[in-house]
Image 1 (cartoon, helix red, strand yellow):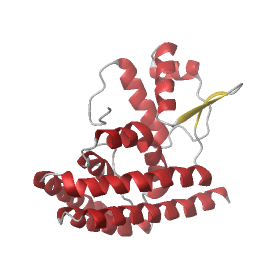
Image 2 (cartoon, helix red, strand yellow):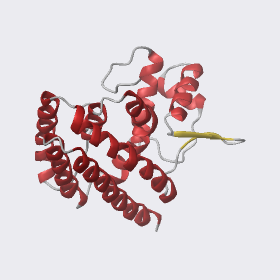
Image 3 (cartoon, helix red, strand yellow):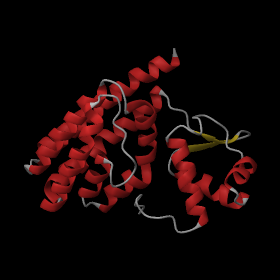
Image 4 (tube, rainbow, N blue to C red):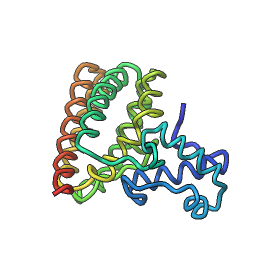
Length: 222
């Protein structure tokens, strides 16, 4: 199981983390072809290290391979968003339900502190950027579920592809303040140990996020 606040252990890890960050944040453009030769020069590592990183990125759903084309960064599409967020709504809804039952009082206090630390950024109304890992509200709740199968499905599975949509299309504009308010209500439900409400609010929050990203996708396609 991967925890994203861990330090890279090998140079292959370091390259993989760097590539993943650049793909998620759009520095390496969606849909672009990945050349082992170019990337090995850019990162000053062997092609074998790049090949391993690309394999790991494929397992994270950030890269796809096609016959006669090779490896490409996935494209952000309306269809891809719909399929991804259907799964996300269900799994993260369950994570919020379990977090309300399983998080310790200290973990809930830490979650409230994390949210308070986001407030200054949000009140300007411009951006609600959250780094991967511990400082990401959703990551904390996923871990708080304490269900190792669910954590693995989300964090080792779709977490970074979800982040790619969130970072490139979802963390700015008028949605920022409403997303923050929704986070506050989810934390309150978890604090009250109201598992049913926590799940309902998380599912609704993800549904609203999907609609917001969908609108931005439509505008970028026009």
